[in-house]
Length: 202
Image 1: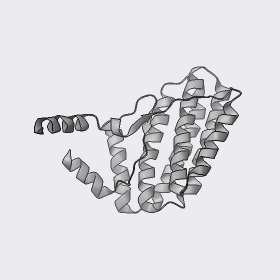
Image 2 (image 1 turned 120 degrees about the vertical axis):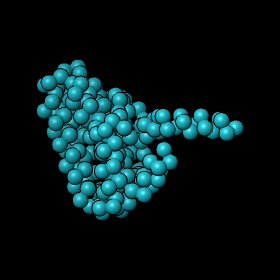
Image 3 (image 1 turned 180 degrees about the vertical axis):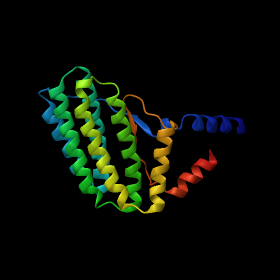
């Protein structure tokens, strides 16, 4: 029994990224006659969310879907459709910025950690699409970075450290992202102390 527990613990340590990522596919893309309906259903799902945090998390999920759409149509050299997806991404960023003013600081930290993963995904997409799509994706990255930086100002130094620790892990390659993978919702906020405890256990 102890041997089994040891093996399970080793597996959890070896693949930490799998616990925080989930696959996102583009689904219906701009240019389809059903795209407007897809956008409408996404907005409906936001309205059904109860709290500002839940609404912001949902909008970030939608932004990831828009990113997947940008990647798909860009690789097909459909620049007009890419711009449509980018505009829908911009809308999500603006709505998240508005919602963040209503989110308590401890919850905002978790949202910031997800935002870093989203920006990383945008940068991954930029590296894989044709050059003519760069300008549009650069604007999407700029919007996401602007939103992230504004939120960073709203949180205390202690909580800011936990977000910066996540950034360090991303930059060092401890956390990686592959095509179609994004940060998953978390059931609780990761504070600086919790993160330190987790790293000590590992």
